Image (cartoon, rainbow, N blue to C red; front, side, top):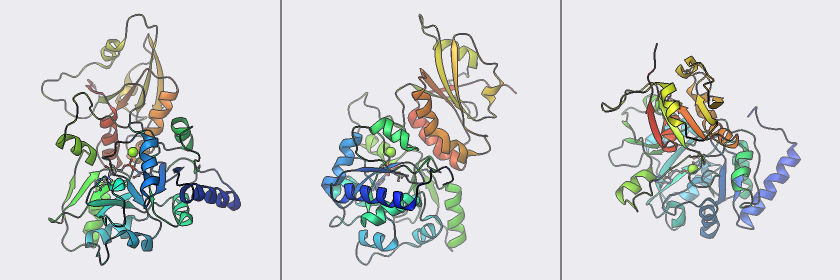
Length: 379
Ligand code: TXA
Ligand code: MG
């Protein structure tokens, strides 16, 4: 991408070889850039290598990993023999691979260690478009299992320095490819169900609108696209609730994050509050100033309030114009991590429309936010 630092090809080549050596010979995880977020990769076909991903991230063993491939022949080696792609997948692959789309496939347990799939009968696979990701997989000459390169529960890293700040001391190598273009994780799609419908298990870099457009363009009988606003992990927790109070949080920095609703209709029992009274309610006795981080679109309703207000220090992180949800998606995790590093006591995120990239944006924000506050918005 344009934002990437440039390296000479020999520097790039030796960095890739070093990383591939760490992966293949030492069986140790390596952080690398993809077009979505930075990944923490390990050899997908080696159970002991992939187990180090879980221990490094503190990731629960029941959350399966995505397997990354660099070519179609490599994809073939992962699929059951004689497996034929459904027409929906052929269409989606034609338009979105390489790119931020992950597809579920039937898992061949003789090929893929159960630790990767958390024992699921399916395996999630994607072909990233980032040249460094593709080259690393190709040089390693084997598929890489890779979750986002962050401690479990934290925002996903979109820059090499985010990975460094989080995992320094736990991993030996980060390939720096600059800022990730998309900034949110891939869209996870299940098209394997008998009803032929497409289930979006996690909204992400490829929008639901684009998936629908491609299916209409390519297929005679057009499947329904169902969007699950929660992801696989939430469903596992709902099916088998663990200890109370162990509510699963995701994408959260160390400071509290609240969602400010300025677009959606509040539930009938909730009365929207005035922004200034809400801020006053946050003040704690004995604290001189509260540092409030605000993530909001540049043209947002919150801009109408005359800031600063006594007793508050503002850390603003603009998310681009509200008409450009791709930009907001690109900046969300960077914004959370930047405001945390700048010492915010609390982070407030303003709601955006759940259209196009806004759907994935709001999915991540809902998981990060401890509380939802409805604001009175005038005008
Ligand atoms: O963009 C991305 O997808 C990034 C980069 C590094 O490629 N990776 C990523 O991985 O976001 P991770 O581990 O943070 O998210 C994997 C998602 C989870 O929501 C997981 O539950 C889902 O994929 N997943 C993986 N295998 C699955 C399966 N067999 N069935 C259902 N969901 C699955
Ligand atoms: Mg993740």
